[in-house]
Length: 179
Image 1 (tube, rainbow, N blue to C red):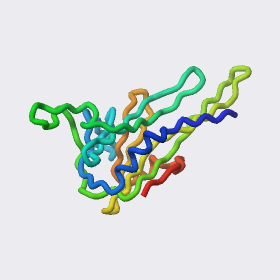
Image 2: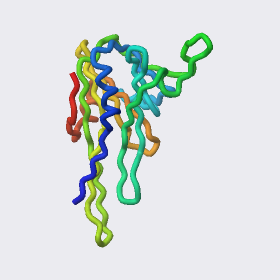
Image 3: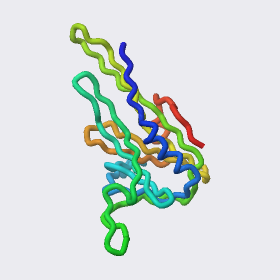
Image 4: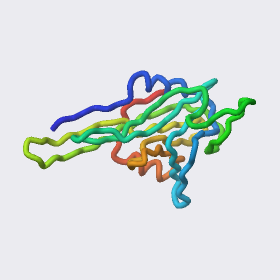
């Protein structure tokens, strides 16, 4: 059995440390997909404000003819991904999720794995381990998740606290923690 690790880079992970201690109340996105029967919101990307910049989270489906997996991307920019500013500097053309204002006190990174079993002669089981979800713990005892939505639409999930968040973490392994 071959194991392939496809984790976020050190440079990507350094962006997360900047969020510890940040007071947040809005999560920005270009478009928001909402299922009213669920506490799960999805978008092509989400952005959190961090001092004078934004930390952006985005999901991509990756792979080749031998295996596939989902890859989170963490970047930093002057504005939220996909949202423009007008001449006055005001942001236009986006959506947001309002949360109770609170500070991020801890971030957990969870990994998942994709197993591809090939029945062709000479092929072996391939397991791809990849970073799948961030859980942000807040000073008000609440938490939320930003992570991959396992679909070909390459959406990123936001889950606010509760059962859906716990269900989403089932079977995942905590890989890194920041305090």
